[in-house]
Length: 309
Figure 1 (tube, rainbow, N blue to C red):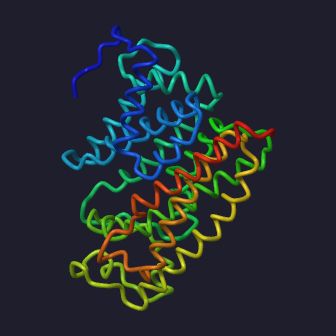
Figure 2 (cartoon, rainbow, N blue to C red):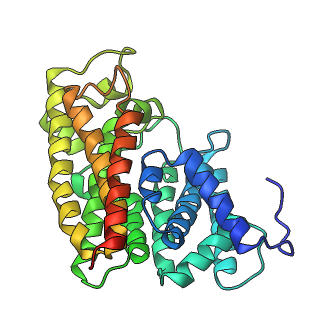
């Protein structure tokens, strides 16, 4: 990686443009919700997403050892903390995020927690031992750090005054991450990771090796379907929190949250509709359906601007 020249600080407009480009290229489901936000909030969300993406990319660089990745992540965070406290930086993501946290009063500790979650995947030093979570409580902590913290950052940008929004945003993040975990069971296993709790595997009679070493394209067994259905029901329960959260955030931000929740919930429904066969084909929401949801969200945004609060 080429060292950054701290004397060449990009303009704020340029910094946000870089973050918007990263979000548009990488965000998939998230980006459709970003579009339904007013520009200042959209810029801030894109900046936070770009920050998350950078942390993920450093953590997931499998060309390096886990120790090297952790060292790189620690160095990157040290540079961020200096920039956050006003040090010159040429990193456009740092410039944009610094402005966003000031503009929307985002606590710095939330970004620290976000990166702590990313770093959890680097805790196991060998490739021989798979990454697993013993209990759902252990998995919940991981989901909190990588997803709920994002929700807590987002509601600062969305705007809220009722403190109940914080717990609801946390639980909405859990719903999203459990949906991601279900979608990615096959891909995670290929990377020696199983996020489904070991206590749930045991309860359903599913061997860890059956997930880690399965024939390509083999459909799930009855026991595996039951296991995945239990995780899906937990996610469904947490989606109720998303519906309760919606009226608690600022009116002009509600369409964006509605779009995001609707797209993620649609992904969970597609997993269920495929009878939990997440091994033969990766579940996704078709582009046409996403665009339809976005169109409905944009109509909601127009109404929020016209109608009295």
